[in-house]
Amino acid sequence: MGYIAKLSARRKILGIDSATSEVASLQPDSAQALDDQSDMIALPTYTAEDLAEQGEDGISRDTRQALSAEDPLAKLLSGAIPLAIFDNAMQQFGSPLDLAEQFYTMFTVFTRISALPLILQRVLDSMAATAADSPFTQSCFCRQPLAGLSIDDPTFPVAMGDVLKRIRSSLAASSDKATFAKKVSDWLAVLASDEQMAPELKQVISVTLKQLAKQTTDGAQP
Image 1 (tube, rainbow, N blue to C red):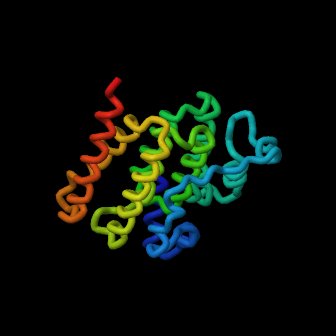
Image 2 (image 1 turned 120 degrees about the horizontal axis):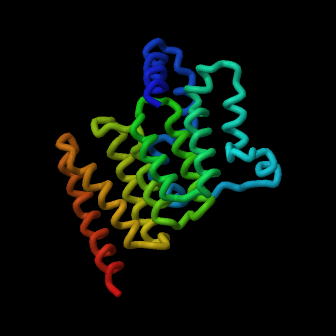
């Protein structure tokens, strides 16, 4: 993944990062980021054809097609290789959500990979197909808008607003509110500890943490 990030950055500098433009075209603009539809997890639809074309190794049809590309660089930049590893791991271990969450967290570290949004969406689709209301799935869904963004990015405040909307809707839908609240609280606390974050955003996060703390306390009561 580190090697892919370096290649992606080099292509961007040289002005030949076509993957970036393709990914950007798939992302909603900032005006749409706070649309009510962002509060919902869209479950993927699987057909008999999809299942028939999925190999015994668990690698999905789309990932397999990307891996079949003749250009090895295209395989790297499309995210096909890390997704093939993810698909295979899910197949081998029975699609455990805690493992999928670990993959999600690991992928978010590589912010300079142009295919990052597609990789994370593929992981989320897999998790949602297993259990959309799981706190593992819901917490990753809430973190998604900030993936690849630095705190000084101009779009960060809008993305943070999307995160807060997702937290509210996911809390209502989660099958385990206490666990969900704990996961999101831990993530928000680390996020708010960044000294570069605007005081206004820290205040909003502080209020959200207090609301989540109540859910954690209530969930711990017999």
